[in-house]
Length: 106
Image (cartoon, rainbow, N blue to C red; front, side, top):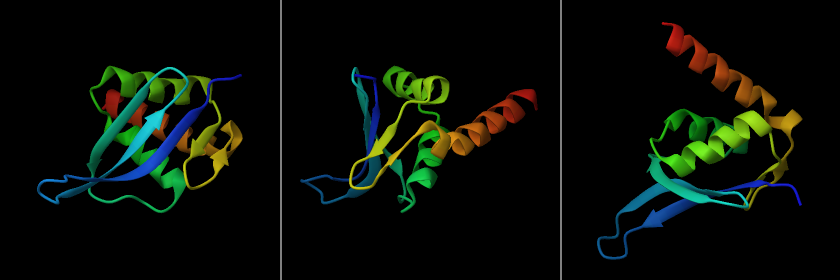
C-alpha cells in the first residue's frame, strides 16, 4: 500500500482553563504531528494545505511529512472532508515552492 497523508482540522481545548486553539493533526504511514498555531482554520481544504506548508514549523516530523507532500506528491486525505490526488493540489505546492524560492533569493 502506498504511503498516504491524512490531515484532520482540529480544535484543541485545554480541559483545565477552557482555552481553545485551532490546528491540525497530520500523519502518514510512519509519523504523526500536530500543530495548534492557527488563529482560525480555513474551510477550504486546499487553503488549509497552503496554511500548513507556510507555517514553517521547526519540527523534524513536520518537515518529514511536508517534504514528503512536496517531493513525492502522495494522495492527501482530509478527515471529514475529501481526498486529493497530486494533480488536484499541485498548484498549492507550486505556489509554495515559488514563495520559498522568492524568499531565499531576496
